Image (cartoon, rainbow, N blue to C red; front, side, top):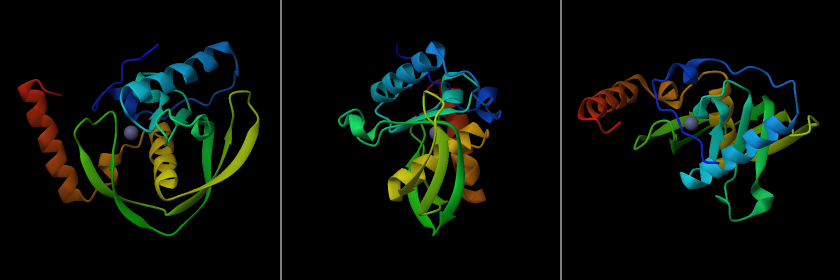
Length: 169
Ligand SMILES: [Zn+2]
């Protein structure tokens, strides 16, 4: 089922998600729906708060549905190590049409649970590292617009307000 993606400034986006404690059919359904929603929106990652569910769940697939091996479910994820810095453009499904350069660690190691509750660790670099950091930020109620420089943040907030006035947001 394709879920509705909420846009900034929907309050759920700014709230820290609740840790997942039940690894049940409801969680598996949420994960499946999140992948379906991401593909329908041509995104590479989604966090549960973006579909109005304040839980620490994110789904990532850099292949956008083309390679099942790329499907990644991170539940209760934490960054345990990061190194380097990259300043690259990114976007967010909750900020349609906004793309901006944001500084992120070049490499991260994360720890997370899978759909069955099993803990695992993995590393990511470049785009995967960026995506992991962006999605984990969502679970802390942190949005990429607040990772931009003050000037760019203000410009984009103004752009959003204009789109809201025009009814295109
Ligand atoms: Zn996002």
